[in-house]
Image 1 (cartoon, rainbow, N blue to C red):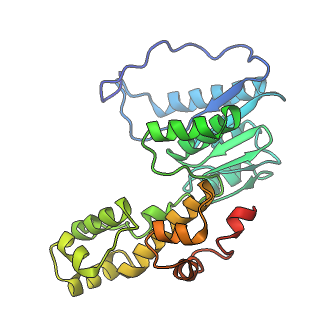
Image 2 (image 1 turned 45 degrees about the vertical axis):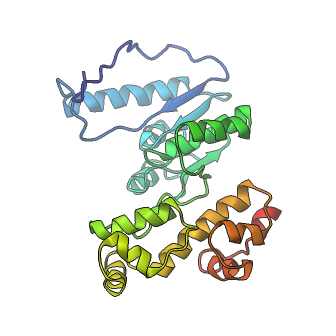
Length: 276
């Protein structure tokens, strides 16, 4: 029984043999989650050793090995990432590189696929990886439907950064600035004047600009344009709208204004998304 009252049941020993073509998923550990009774560090180490030995004995060609978050560390200890590109939670990348010196550890990636090895970054990146797998197995439509059912705002690709652009500038605790950011993120294409945003923050436009620069580390205009560009990026990837219509739907006055803002975030022009 976990500390929040969630029971874990039907727990069985790892199978002696894994069927051909199976997917083996290795999740990471969750530090700070209390169980009653809480396992000792020695017991945890023994469990991890047993998992590593089982992986070494059972994972063979034809199996798809999927790791979530720090699960990649167990796969690395089993020697299953040698010669492969891989990733893990951004705080664990150095340890992963130490455990698998022959692997190519890619930082700041949501997930990495190298042959039969699928590795993801921390926590929710595992959801992005699973959506990618569903899309590969059943088609894009099914994956999009699942994402919509789970109320996932955007489907992210493996090459996207672990630190989401939607969270950029939010590493602070100022409630008024967060209220403004929440409003903008909910509808980046809206007409966000300083006066309108100041009303949300319950402050003056000039003071809000000072607060935003101090706590978010950027201007209000830069924040709005950054989210609009990210929204435009998703529309260009997922629709056949022309650039002028994309600019209109994301709050830019023209495609020229969109291109100008785009250059601050990307090295390649918007049209490159359509040709890739």
